[in-house]
Image 1: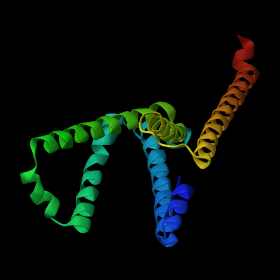
Image 2: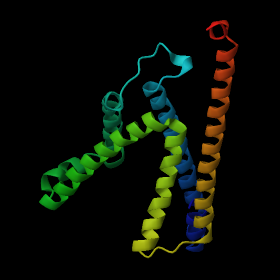
Image 3: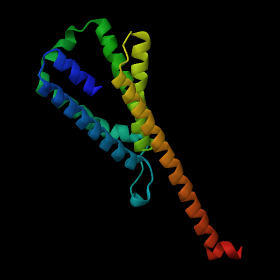
Image 4: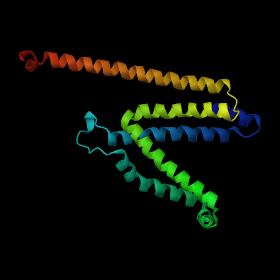
Length: 195
């Protein structure tokens, strides 16, 4: 998608440095999201390396992180846009207020579901599920909105699906080898042989 956007910008005569900045910011956002998912996974799931750490439910973790997210968003809005958006709230129409409320409810619901997904699948699998979401967006846009699928889009989609299948295969083989090691350890223990 990034390469296609870069091609379109250069064809329209725009500077490629702006597109490279956008691609860099996108990769940085992906990296930051991955780190956040791993940290949240460590707060919700039990791992051998952090036995003493208390484990939180998805809603407790969301409640813990929400004030920081709200404060960061508020500061970012004030720095980038000033006070003007806050003055416009009083002039908002009923339709716009309804859409804002629906957007807020949807954001809270999706945040809770994202936390539950990380809790159930773990950070790595949740990241892969997030990438499959992009494929669904492309499929809906091409089916219902007339978006044209290009070769780079299809190659990218195939790479996402290939990555997901490789990850699942590696995960299954890791679980199988872990189960075999546990079975061998249990079978060779003296308490197992005496029973």
